[in-house]
Amino acid sequence: MENRPLSRSPWHLAMALLSVLAAAPAHADNGSPLPTVRVETRELDEVYAADAIIEAVQQATLAAQINGSVTAYLVDAGDRVKRGQVLARLDARDTDAQVAAGRAGIAQAEAALAVAKSNYERNKSLVEQKFISQAALDKAESEYKVALANLETARAGSVQANTARGFAEIRAPFDGIVTRRLMEVGEFASPGRAVIAVHDPAALRAVGSLPQFMLPVTARVDRAMIEIPSVGKAYAAKSVTVLPAADPRLLSTQVRAELPSVSVPGIAPGVAAKVLIPIGKAMKRVIPESALIRRGELVAVNVATAQGQPQLRQVRIGPSVRTADGKLFVEVLAGLTDGEQVLLNPLAK
Image: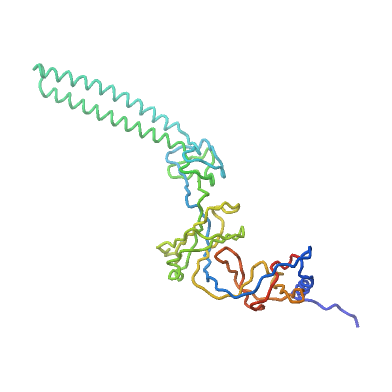
């Protein structure tokens, strides 16, 4: 009869591999014992994890206020800018013509005013000498006042033209970074059409949504953790605000958690985040996330024994728990008891 090798399931292969790993003594290459951590049950926060997006507290999408094509960009996405710095220019030929027309209108109004004033003063003298009637003087005075009003109108028009000329240059409203350019050179910009966006990277916040059934327990929340999965870090929020109005379409309420003033590569507007809001307390048996050995669906730990050789043990775990100081733990549902010691970094050997 032909001998055939016994088939092994992926679970048996994973356990065999982990058994080989666990067979090594619990010592580092230099002979010193590897660090362990005590399994214990502690009181931790029960949290609700709200999906969120990072956004800048101060951000602006700058739009055109006059008609004209984009003639030049002086900055690009990622450039740092100062308040008042010119970011882009629009075609200013039409506004330049309006400015010139405004100056000409002022000159014309000033000349007409000079004539009307001279005529009024002359007629005033003639009335005193009884050469003309009072009606003629009243007419000259009226023409003088009209000329004054026309000059004020011309000056106001000139101010308006100069203001419109200023709109041909789009300037930064605050110190920050250019987020993106929303038009290309040569495209026609009309009033209200976005041209360029900027934001201040010094102040960021996570903006998420809370379902309405969570509002009773989060209405007075005053602290939260902001978790950034892409960089593997979490930060205590400087402030937390649950907006006092709900969205009737999504049946949710917006929550805003402000990040501390930290500069970490990878944290920028648009990055996914989670706002961890405490909703109560619970007793949980936890160990650090770094103590776990993961092989596919298998999760195990190396338990330190009195003989000095670690014992591989499969465990069943619950959700990860982030403490107030930002450390990441995982809840152990089965496989360990309080007081046991597990290797903190089981694969260091």
